[in-house]
Length: 261
Image (cartoon, rainbow, N blue to C red; front, side):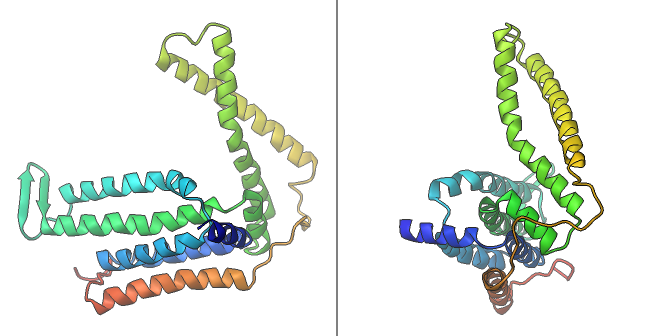
């Protein structure tokens, strides 16, 4: 696993982030076209096999995907209690109706959330913000001002936690953070908001002074290339989606969202 992880991680890091976004989006679009559990289960099974070659350490994989594993079953439980009222009734109380239809819809919803969320998280783990900005501007030809502004804002997000800890230590040193947890949180959040606005204003002024807002065509320090590896990743995503749909149609479980159910 370690050899595959090192090689896979090195390979996936070299793939253009635009291709990763395209593969995740393609898979998500295909999976939301139906509400059956077969297509989502097939896609999830294939994805779990491919995750071995994604190069993401298992500890990081479980930590980053933990919200998906938590919220997918919660969504399934909600659908099971308040979903489609069809078939045998197993439990009924006020607005709660657990039936064959609600259980089937809950299973399809839960597996579909896992099949869409897990590959998206795994692919986004390996995306560097600067590489993503280069790809959006050079490959997709998005406006440079929008891309660079978003990149600058994204880079500042990582400083929020440091600022929060610094504010907490400073307030504790002054003896104003010993009681009133809710009040302390509100005042500290407001202080962080003021600090963020000031920092954002300074950054905007600095970027404007360096002609980041100019109308002339920009040059880029690093070329963003889109070649065979990128098309291969998109083809893998399309293959997973195609196999899932084919198995679902072959078994008679395909349930198009705009068609009769």
